[in-house]
Image (tube, rainbow, N blue to C red; front, side, top):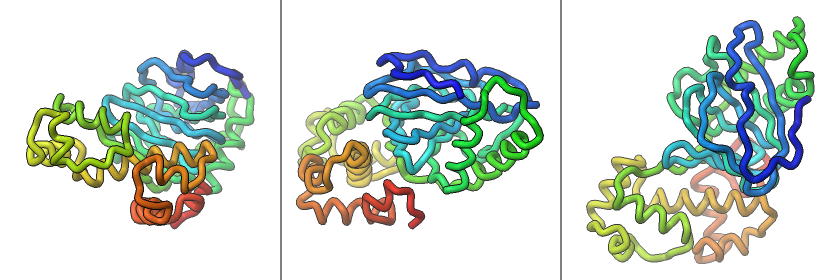
Length: 269
């Protein structure tokens, strides 16, 4: 198993994702990453299933962000320009899928997927083998089973859609830096230089979410990163602008269908 240990803050993506070989439908690559490590924007010929055995990853494509805790993996289709930032130290394992195979052909963009116990074990098994060794019959059967399982994994709402309009970007940028800002849109509109009605329309048209839902999602994704770093629900609630820890847990359950700790353990709601 190839592992680059203690990768520097800025690291070069692996070239494994550029190998085209239908006889090897699944190729693997593993690396350990420091806190704050980031790749340059890049894309792969192969589709990529990226999982952090430990740690939280942030995947960014354009203005859209996907948060990936260890209970989940992110599917990145071939040709999608993206970069990765580690929110904590992370042990990353990758499956790169040859372009001759399209396990999730229905989606055009990245997607965070809830990992099944079977998928986790298959990733561990596939990434434990020598990546340079030829595929035998057993490995090929396992790779085929992994492709079937990737196709069946449910998608999770761990994405924060981005904006393009400059006025909306000013507002989303401010809230990204200050997620606990409690002001309503009527007051925040002055930061963007647009009316509240215009901003609400822009949120709907560019992100598919209302302003209230977008800000709520922003806070909850920030909460997932903090939970993985070991912060308590109480500390997170007050740091992110919730009225109380119970209000935070209720909002988390409403968005993700289960309380924070169950979510992080990857339990199916």
